[in-house]
Amino acid sequence: MTRERLRQFDSLVQELVEEQERLARELRHARRVEETCGVGCLFGMDYLEAAKTRVRELSARREDEVAEIRIWVERIPDSLTRRAFKLRFLDSLPWGEIARRMGYRSDSGPRMLCARYLAEHAG
Image 1 (cartoon, rainbow, N blue to C red):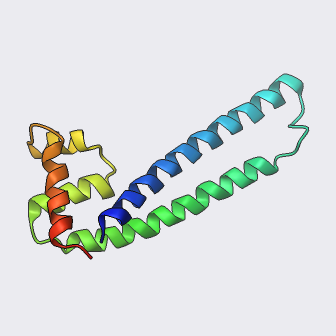
Image 2 (image 1 turned 90 degrees about the vertical axis):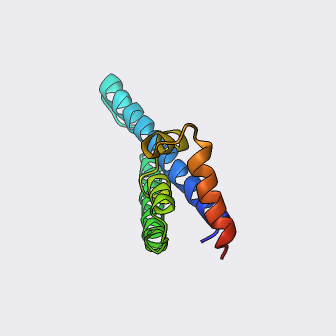
């Protein structure tokens, strides 16, 4: 596992959240138009289906990545390091929350723990 792959995974998770939020806004808008005008969107609903498909694709990619990351994380021998990686990449918690749960004073503690592990075990 590499730092870049984990960075891309973080980005994928955030992209999925953003796409889910966009889809929810579009669905609310379509409902409002239908309630207000009594008809559906005059331009069709293809954009909603495309948005739903995009969310499903991103969700599937995220699940594939989570499965691989889970296998990799379980092989980390050190419990503290393993916990930090699990909280960050399997539970998607921010570094500050991870630090609080693990008893660090700042978010740099668990972040540096993970960075050191990646530097020592690059590949």
